[in-house]
Image (tube, rainbow, N blue to C red; front, side, top):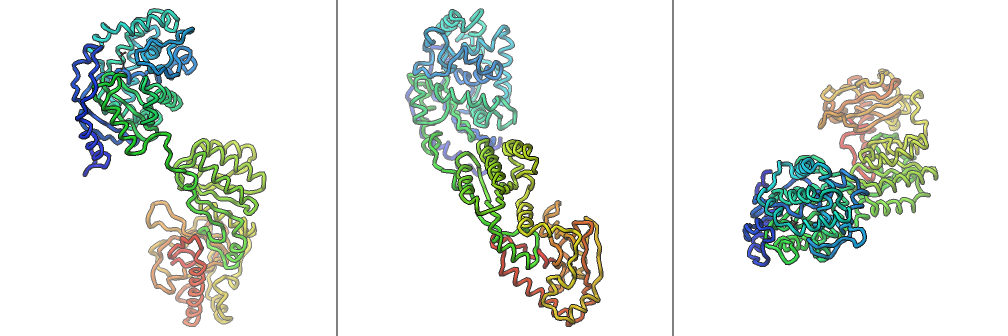
Length: 615
Ligand code: GLN
């Protein structure tokens, strides 16, 4: 991964932190495994990997060392995946010991080790993985590590041999567990596999990416490979939280507030779920076997960025509602006749629209639902616009589907444009609509479609009638014309009957006529910025289009197509318009333009030249 040009603030911060803590001289390099004593106490690296796959590092982050106990949570996750939670729990508990990593702490009557982060528990887990074929167990462990790091892994044979020769205490633990039948059969292969997994070589960047994979719900952010199923990730992080730092676990979660794991070679990995993995490598250890600089680095990063998991600075509830409005102030891009606009203004409050944004979780959605239910008597149609929502969890999906149920039983309609992008919601609502057979709240993908439908409901079904015709004389355009002008218009009008999809004109066409709609609907589309036509407005009977060039003299900017098979309009060629009629048409255009400006569709995103003023 290439570094950011110009340096990132995270990098600058890490550089300074590294400089400040490098002079720390406390702690001792582990020597009980003879080979580990060769480590240089000055080695010091820090790496951060984000769930977006960005990597920041400073110091000795390419220095390889053995993973040691940091292997434990990963092998534990693998056992959960291979053997299932119950079988693993039967052999190894999940209670913190408050004792040292190599403590001989087994449950008195069962001999079950208290948790998988202390040596006893980890050896029991490795024995489960070894099963009857330890060599295959090792292959699976290496493949598992490779999914987390995205590269080929190897064992440091000298460290392995050194520990295998001197690990009498671990050997004693294994035999003790054999006595209790926690380990069945020969304890040696499982013990040997444990020594080998502890001797896998990693550098600080590997550890950060492994942490980021756990932070990313089990998916390696660099390779996209899934290393562990999400429910098992939660279990692994849980034991790291309560037991990962041995007899310092309580103090660690109190101060740093992140699941973590340390190893005697000097590594520490901390996980900030949903955000990043932090790794530190520095061999000198404190009396509990945790890296001295490693603890300091994590404490400082946590404090400086307020990362403690139980520190929640933001209440999300209020921030998800971007705006609240109703149909008196809001309009779809469907153009309406003046009489209809008046009716919509009068009845518009029966349609409510909430524009939502950000992440919908339990707290935020509860607050929204509370707000909505208080208003329930006042609306008929509720539109929750989810198109700006970036995430919606299971709790939010559940509350929204309950809300859909409730509104349905009170004869209210709920529409959730944008909701089709949120899998938990689609899933939760599938049950609601399959029960009732109705099209359900997800029937519209865009807010504009939902609004248009809501307006149609308010105006009544008659509007959609594709057969009845609005006489030319009753067109909005004619309202301000005198009798003479109307007569003239009728004589020069040419009838244009359309089929669905028929193009009336294209952008660039010369503007040579205006159109008065008699029947059906016409859509004004813009293809200026995208390949996909963008709907600017939909127009129905009694409305005008193509009249703007009468004033501007410009050619067409948009595409206009007929939407129905029986759509029809009158074409009024510009060249047939006598000067006196032209003056009246321009006056009518000006009046309608002025009305539109002053009505200014409240929540206002008026299309600049859209509507029935399109060229
Ligand atoms: N292999 C080491 C041991 O069992 C691991 C201990 C550790 O990293 N805390 O002693």
